[in-house]
Amino acid sequence: MAPFAGAKLPADEDFERTADGFARMLREAGLERVVVTEHGWTWNADPDLLWYSVEGGVAGAGALYARLDADDRRRFRAAFERVVDERAAHGALPLEHRAAVAVSPSS
Image (cartoon, rainbow, N blue to C red):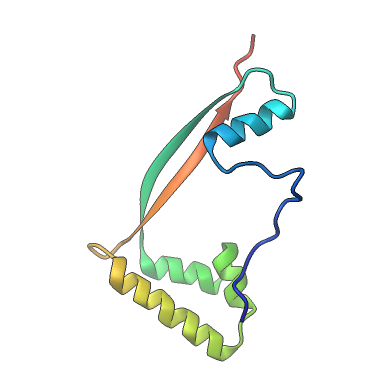
């Protein structure tokens, strides 16, 4: 089975996935003054709740899981369990996140 990849933006609409790239895209869209800051955090996710979201079809992982046959679903679950076994700490799965937040101050 081919790796799952979501829809991509057309090349002329895409932007560099960094805070600077986000700011550049906003300026090109017409925001003259924009300040972008990047924030990072760790979400200590409950593996059981994460799995419920996969089974419920949530986000990219859930969309992929929903289109799998029974054998591939078992392999997906086994891979999920391996990741949890390898990376969980104190019953939680630490997931690193980053977000760019843009503000356009009024004049």
